[in-house]
Length: 343
Image 1 (cartoon, rainbow, N blue to C red):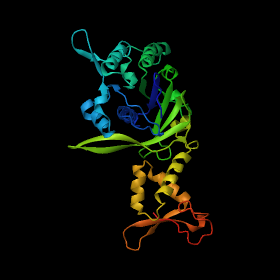
Image 2 (cartoon, rainbow, N blue to C red):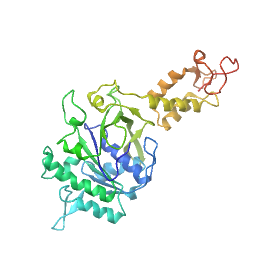
Image 3 (tube, one colour):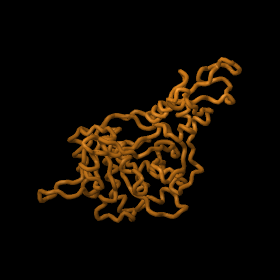
């Protein structure tokens, strides 16, 4: 998951899909210099938020804390000074220079999040291509000057059942045309009632336009009765067609990469032999592997649970019928002393 520096990037989806939580996750990674879900390192930098959907004290700050963000590098720009000495809402058409002022004041900005873009199109017809371009081009030019990634968050329209993902982005097609990358956020079509979300590229001029990511939105306690939500990504990537994702189809979702990751995890974890099943599950969760992917990998490796004689919980072992040379203990096929590992 990479957002192009010096360019506009778009994240779109239906309400409640986790778009804002996702953008705050990215902000946290930038503020701390963390690691992107694909394993690449993120250079540390400052982040600016232009948002009106979340109250800073009630929602924005708890979400950033839940994502382990460095708050000293996170800056909110939701209003600007007016001519009468008061404040007025940020206006994309007239206030882009205010973002550059903030960048100079903070020693640069690496990420700028505008959520939602529709809230700042004052006096602009969002369905008019020329008017939308006139608003986005100065923003694009500012991104180039600052060498910052600008992420604009938008909603999906109802669209048609067989429409493309790009056609679902609300407003004019200029939103997608001006952006260097565009991403769709949707529920996992295999489990639409669950909490798993899929992030799939609709347009990506900086990489593979079919490489997707999976994450869940989870709640965590921050102390003093305060709770925050955060995005937790699964490790690895998979190939997915964004059009199929928004249509709710699953035929082109290929999770082989995620499965390969958890398979390697299992083999490594079982190198020393039998392990308690609870420890396997906790370690897998900590490593970012979903329980469903873990179960698929266990099945593929021929691993199943077995009750321990002392009644202290389950264990797992490799089925003998799959033994062609144990991947864990590196014993050769036919070696009667090669024991299948347990977990």
